[in-house]
Image (cartoon, rainbow, N blue to C red):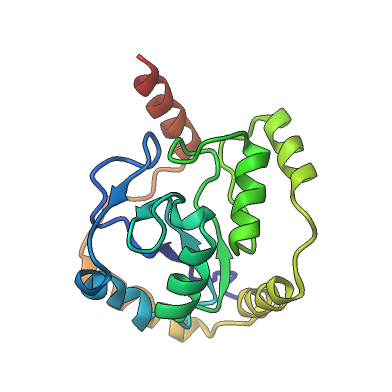
Length: 197
């Protein structure tokens, strides 16, 4: 079994962001008509079973809230224009693009339409606050999650995996082997401390 489910990220895109959302909140004034080409990859992959939001303000959608926290951003843009109906996960709720406590940010993202919350830092008190703030999954979210469970438990023929691996290597060429001591949380912590100096 493959044990893998694809996740498209970050809806509706960070391509025009001029700041790093780990540290600051990106904001763009680009008209929606000019964003059509940016949205195209997401629309072409709208059938993906899982997706992650972007912490970015698109003023023509919502001038106050980033997409993760915006009902208009999720309902009108992600579920509407992009036609995405998979499990919607927030980008990491502990990134500095969002303001408020972990619990406040989670509640706002869920109320806006996210199905699940991504939290990366691993601080126990924040995890406890997050668990207390998050209600049970909605029926729609449970249905989307069940689709993912079926995908990751379905057996994948070895020949298919070999063929995909060969095609992947043909497209991207030789790459450095994965470094198992890479820690995204530590990178985030370093960025946080660098931003505080």
